[in-house]
Image (cartoon, rainbow, N blue to C red; front, side):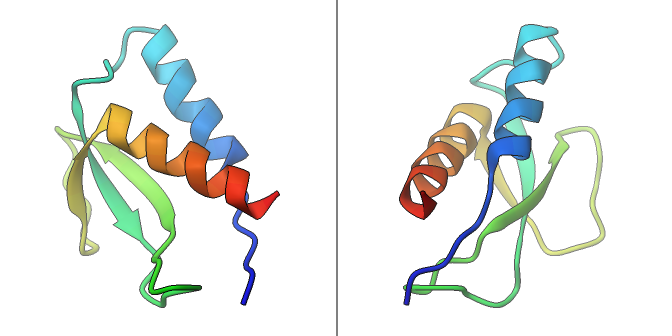
Length: 79
């Protein structure tokens, strides 16, 4: 089953934060994923928080560069 998940906005937001000096590629983010898998047991990233914010939802900690790599890869697959 093919799915479509448009990550263009999240990719742009993270790149803007890097360009503004708010975060760097080696910083960590708290990543929130969709609870229900969409395909091949993949749970899409739906939001992220900086390391000083504590989301109430279940989250995982990832490096900014790894988040960007996943977003770009999954975005390319959806096209």
